[in-house]
Length: 446
Image (tube, rainbow, N blue to C red; front, side, top):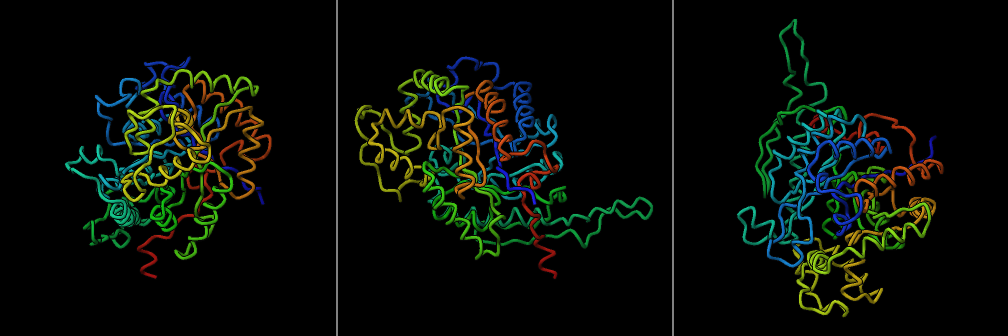
C-alpha cells in the first residue's frame, strides 16, 4: 500500500498575498489582468503537481475614501471566468473557486460548477463561504448582513440544494442511441422538488453528472457553526492555525464529528493555510521577508488589520496595544479569524504595528520563512502528527515567490516521499483520494 502523501493547494492572488507585494521587485502592473501570465502560473502549478489552484472571492471593494485604499490593490477576479479559461490551458490540476451562499442562488451556483466540472473533465471544486460584511450586503440591496447563525442556516440548506441538483442526473442518464432515437433515459433524471426555509427549487439541473460525479465541496469556517457545516457537507476544509497544538485539536475535533453524519475520517481532508517565503539560505529568506515588510505603507497595514478585526483602528497609537474590541458575538463576519488575531496579539504582546506586520502576508494564516529543508521539516511534522492532511499554500508574490516554491520546496517534499512526482489520476477527486459520494436519488430508491 502506498504511503499517505500531502495534499497541496496553490492559492492564487495577484500580485501576491503580502500587502506590499505590488511594490516588490519582479511584480508588474501588466500581470494583474493578463490571461497569458495567469495561464503561465497555472501551468507552473501543474508542473509542481499541486492538487488544485484555489481562488478566493470578495463581493465588495473597500470605500475609496477609506484608510489605506490608495496603498492597497482592492481587486479580485470573478472566479468562474478565470477558472474556465485556466481549464483550457491545463490538463490535470484541480480548479477551485469561491461562491457565497449568502448572495447567490443554489441553482445558479450548481449549474456553474457543474459546467466547469464538465469542461475541465472532473477537476472543479466549490469553496462554500458565507458573506457577513456590511459592504458586501450593500451591493445586494441589503442594508445589514444576515446574522452569523442565519448565514450558516442558509448555507446548510444551500449546500443541500446544490448537491441534490448535482445528483439530479445519474451518471448513465444520457443514452444517445441514434438508431432508436432515444437520447436520455428519463428514469435517471430527477426533479428535486426542494421546499425549505430558505429555498424552493424544482430541478433538475441542465448539466449532467461529470467524470468525478460532482464537484468537490470545500469549506473554510472554523466557528462552531462552520465546523458543523464542514462535518456534514465538506470534503476539504481550509483553516487557519498558528500552533501545532491548536491544529491537532482542530483536526481531532472536526474528524471526530464525521461519524454522526455517517462519514469516515478520510472523507474529509484538512488543509491549513501557510504563507511561505523561501530562500536557498535562511539569511536569504529572512532578507526577502524584511524587504516586503519595509515596503508596507502604514495606512495599508492598518486598513488590513481593521478589516480583519471588523473594527476601525484609525486614531489608535500604532505602537500601543490593541484597544478593547467588541464581544465576538457582535462580529458579523469571520468570528474564528477575529478570535485568532486577538489570541496572537495577547500571546505575543503585540502592538498594533507588530500585529499588522504579522498579518501583512499571511492574513492570520501561519507564516514560514526559511530554506526548503526547514520548511519541509515543519510541514512534515504537522502532516505526520495529524495536525493536517495537507496545506493551502499562499505565495508572497507572483511570479518569483511562487516559482521559488515550485523549484525549491516541491523537490524537497518529493525527495522525502511526502508528495507525488506525477498525477496518479485525472480528476480532483482522485488527486485528493476522495471516494465518490452516493447519489441522493439512487440511495432513496434502494
